[in-house]
Image (cartoon, rainbow, N blue to C red):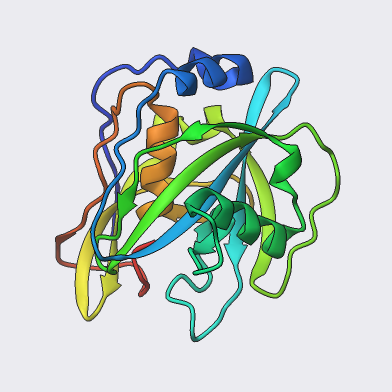
Length: 224
């Protein structure tokens, strides 16, 4: 069950074509950092400027029975391990392992608000980077594909919809973004909420996609 959702307000999207303006906004942003006993994970939101457009890097996760986000569109990242200095180093380690991309050579732009899982006990931190390299990515076995999407495309109201997903035998409604391309990929859950923050700097015009029970559904999965 799907339907277009109204986006309230008229956010200024001019900055979405400029790394310099994103850099300026993140420099003045003070993210909300959550605490608690949830498991922690961290992701890297990697940007690159190509002429008059800024692109954001996504991955499509491989199908794996032991992965609650199996097959989902996501950002490179994963759980914070005991050997990680902090969440940011965990995001950088996971990106290097999953894509062969060394963010130690990238420009670190800033951090977004921490996001807690709506249906899973996890807390996710998002870190934003700018890369200038054109080096080829090398996905490992955890990643089916890596691809870039323009921020202006992600901000297009015509791509924003409400969808129903079956999770733990209940139908729940989420905000989503239809991604470009023939594979009909859909962005939702935690990744959607992080993208919404980035698109809305320094305000947050898109509401959280915390789910509510509804009738009808799309496909099973974990919120992510």
